[in-house]
Image (cartoon, rainbow, N blue to C red; front, side, top):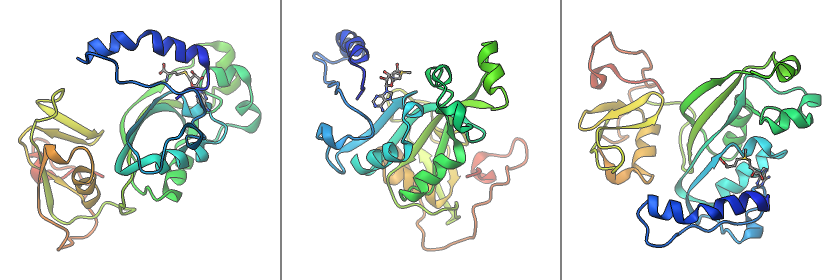
Length: 252
Ligand SMILES: C[S@@+](CC[C@H](N)C(=O)[O-])C[C@H]1O[C@@H](n2cnc3c(N)ncnc32)[C@H](O)[C@@H]1O
């Protein structure tokens, strides 16, 4: 979905290249002209989408809560929002949010992480995971002079449409990755602190377990334990150096 015809033309020109790159006889991709704030007008029904992906678009929307509401409307239960975008360490001052240069640089509309987290919280998504993040340096001196007080990061986010708890609780559960996702034979990263080596059991909190069993990842994991016994808040203390991941627990 894009609101700029020229951008859709670029996408269209690369349709065949991608079909061949990903092993399809014919392209199975459809590009839609429209706004991400209004997916209903494009005929995208409630609970109809497995995964929403996006790269550096949501920061450009002036109504991010609407975008997120639309995404969580169209996702199927257990569906996933997986996107990369620019985040800021504070709310961007109102005057700078309208600055065309800063907007064009994907900085003026950058989301303050805590506001983003609150938007998702209000939509019922209580546990948002960071997959990776990198600091963004402001190389342009004019841009830095305007907004150099803000620290920007490029963040890849994973958020699932499913009921989760607002904290990570410990039910003594353990998950093992089976190594069956074709592009990830040796390991799979659910997020930046859940690195599942193939075949190696890892202690997981109730939310991580639910993400694994209630999503597209379910066939690729074996889970031990249920939620019948609660052991308190999940222990986020890293184990001693060299201790096995299974014994040390991981932070949620
Ligand atoms: C920085 S480009 C990223 C394009 C593409 N996702 C990529 O990774 O190459 C931003 C794109 O977002 C589109 N865009 C911005 N706001 C939008 C909105 N509210 N609805 C739909 N598309 C939007 C623009 O037209 C532009 O093509």
